[in-house]
Image (cartoon, rainbow, N blue to C red):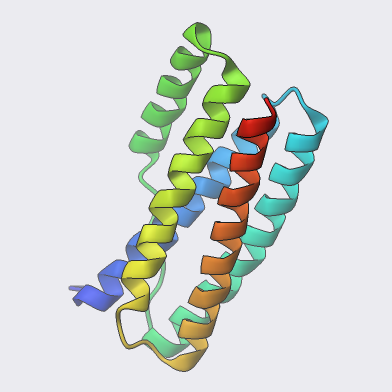
Length: 146
């Protein structure tokens, strides 16, 4: 099935969101500060809800199903992260990686917001944008307090 530009944008967003959830889950096992681990867990739970709702609305309004994750890329990114943690402070590195990922997700959401989706999808994109911005600000706060 060929996707138009708007469908491709939202499909790319969903794939990246699922990757971010996997990354947060992985990070939870490697964080040393309980405060950061709790924030990551809360963010992951909130994001899971937002993604589920967005997927439901996209499926209903656009008849689009999420594509399978790129497991090879995920595996490579995981190994690359582990290798970097051997050289750099692991917690600082994870915060940098999550901040960069949040910025990329915000860009993907902004790209989606430039298309004319049904109102229910647009509302969910706005909620997701707020969540991502809040999470990026929280990560920046943790980076400054380190």
